[in-house]
Length: 239
Image: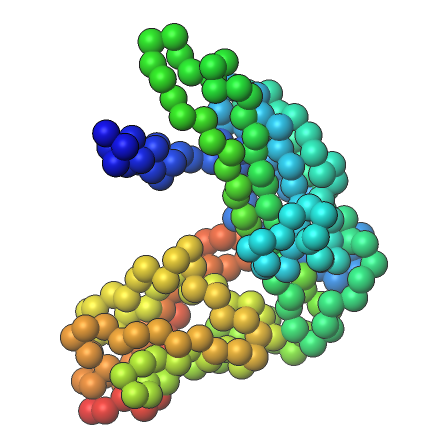
């Protein structure tokens, strides 16, 4: 019985969905701007209290410990069912690097009312607090290329059964998928991040298609959250 109860609780948590959503999946905060706005809406059928903060990617961050040059205002607010609100993201004067983009995360922590008031009379429901994260990218002025040109400089290299994805550009690159021949390689999480002037490693597909091709196709996410397509030469492939 105890094992069954644990399973039911885990299943309920796994199927929970954030009811407070934002109008877009990322915010580009341009250097020199003092603030920008992000509209959020409560899609739940009940009111929630939302706590917001921005951090540098630390999964253990809290509103009291988070470090970022941008803060959300108000940091705590209430949303009625269906209500929309404009969240202000304000620069606090810190100066991120000027030669590359810097990545931060906006946290939206929604706290529902008491479970007894949320549940329908004829059903029971497990009420949990939910934390949603979205990217906030600080973009300096005068970068040496546009994001579209930066995509063309992405590099993919095969080495010892793995693929290195290199980003020699000043932009944060989010890849949503890689394809070798007809074998898609997905499942890197909610977009694979390659920070400026950095690289990440991924396993090759089980078919090891890299041995018979010198090309790689990939999809990437633009400033508006749309998926775009790109291609590159696969370095180190064996023909």
